[in-house]
Length: 167
Image (cartoon, rainbow, N blue to C red):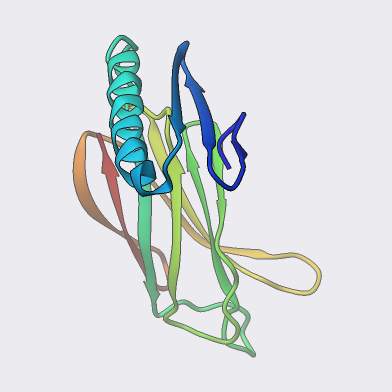
């Protein structure tokens, strides 16, 4: 229900408020409800659009996704249990889930940095999950620039490919 909405068998009142604009609809006949809601919704959409047009532009930021690695080597006796950590500048974006016993994993994770601007570095690290201490399998960094890119980083044993988009 919309804030302030009350309903009886023959009358509905609704009030919606956003950014200082209030729209109120009173419907005495339920057959008119759809028409009134349609016009109220269009009015609110227009009011919100007008209010937002006065705000300063917002950067869409940075999106990093599409991680896949090949030929990773972890401990000498077992295949690696790899996962990825991602940073943009000093901001830690998070890490993927680890995948058990695999040399060439694919991760479906996506990391977003909404306030990112071109010029800082993207850091991607690949780790091998262990019981005591995780081992770093490799890392790479590059300076982000506007546009969409696919990056491949080669390690001493294996490599990782990922995509990023900055706008």
